[in-house]
Length: 94
Image 1 (cartoon, rainbow, N blue to C red):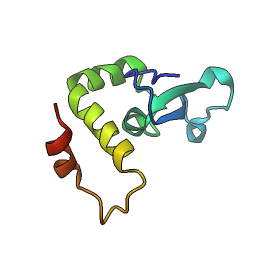
Image 2 (image 1 turned 90 degrees about the vertical axis):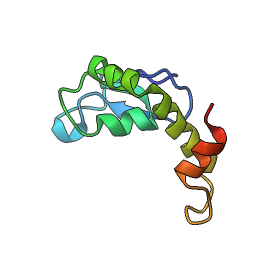
Image 3 (image 1 turned 60 degrees about the horizontal axis):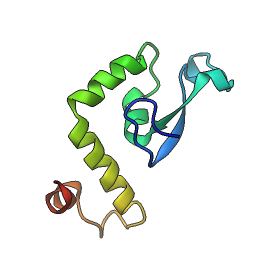
Image 4 (image 1 turned 180 degrees about the vertical axis):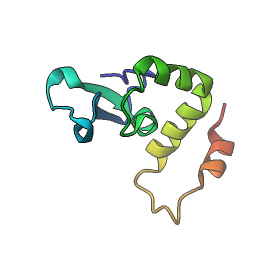
């Protein structure tokens, strides 16, 4: 399933639309797929609709995809041995 906000198909996590900590449930209607970046951007907040998050994504689309790409490319590397995001971006940005 693609991310409900940006459409990425990699690094998908399950998000509670209404967070459990704010009274949400594990019911299917309260779950949605989000990529790592969108999930972190939403955080444990109420009131951040997918429409609002989509606007944030559109404003920063290129960096969003670069950060997801970096995370996927370096996820098995020792963080002290792998390239920094800025080094990786210099080699992989289009």
